[in-house]
Length: 301
Image (cartoon, rainbow, N blue to C red):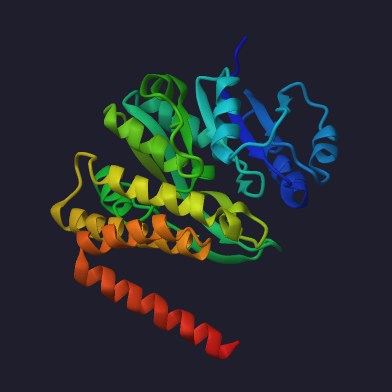
């Protein structure tokens, strides 16, 4: 018999926090779940940690080659059997009520494709360093997404039928697949909601993939593409769309600068010129800001 909830995870070299994360899943006050973990060719002690958990609800998948996080998530999702799918990053902590509370929200509203929640930010030692309180209203969520993604992926639970219908995690995004999934759900007229309570503790630390410099080109490329796609979603207010167009310029500039840092001069030039032509004044202001900031850092160092 299929479980009510499938928890999916893609992990690469997550030994440091993985045990604490898995213990939080084991401590949920809702027991009808399975967990599909893709060990994305880790080279540390990740597999040793996974081997400590002798629970039939946990399934480990070990691909032959390492892939981006989107590849791992798509693989995990393809093996999920639950009616609902909860995302769990390998370094974040789900509160004990998360699975029970979010599944009830989806049970109570068949029009919902995805539910997320508030989150607290913690550092590598587990100390609270901030908080995320996304708006509950879908209109406000769409407006907020014109500038940045207010939803923590690790706080999301979605309806499997909805993601199957809308195509799941987009293949075209290596690292922006989380927001890409939300955009797809919205395009298929599924509603999204945020539960106004803290559901996870979102960890920020120096070794996570979002802080690794060599990934900046792929991430900035995805960010520029997602910025364009989100402005095409129905329901955004006129003021937020103006900010969205500015965000397209900003993300394109960031992509161009990432290419320039990697000495890909021709592609960098094309992206920078495209951004300047899109919004000349804002582009020049942003480039000036980046230049001043960079000079300030060099002066301090």
